[in-house]
Image (cartoon, rainbow, N blue to C red; front, side):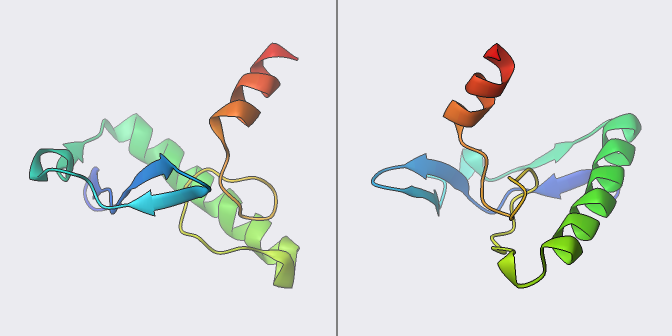
Length: 86
């Protein structure tokens, strides 16, 4: 977090597998200001994420996502929908 703003380094894309790809246009690579409450919540989440990474040990798949499954792998849209429905 950098003073309530952060840069997104890539966009998720679903081709054969979930992967990060570069944004197609400069318009999609921008700094977005965030309210202080959101920054505070993301900092808390980052602390939780670090402890989850520590607990997972060698099983952690580091891919630089903010929100992940228990082993560091990305959360897919399908998993989010299935969790919301159940």
